[in-house]
Image (cartoon, rainbow, N blue to C red; front, side, top):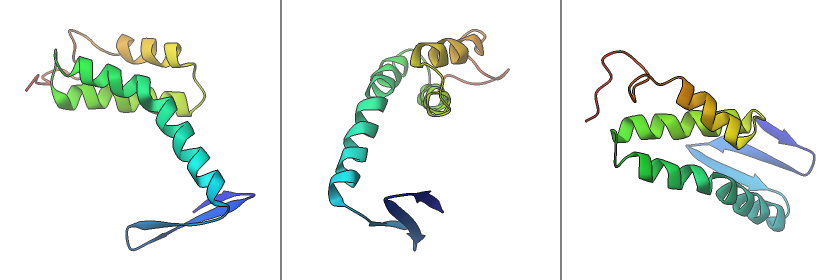
Length: 95
């Protein structure tokens, strides 16, 4: 369960129920979507040159590192450094 001084989110039947000031919820939504927008654009472009699965894996890894506090550019460089010939794993396909 996620705890925050101003609100609580409860997981119930695959839905999150928000209990708190509505402006905080909408602010969090805008902030989140704005933060991930560059990753979404990158992933859409990357998918033109590699598999969709690979592009999603890259974007998810970058977003995860960003969420852990890494600078977005550092997160990007780290994930790119894990690739060899546009693959994370030997035998990864570009389908």
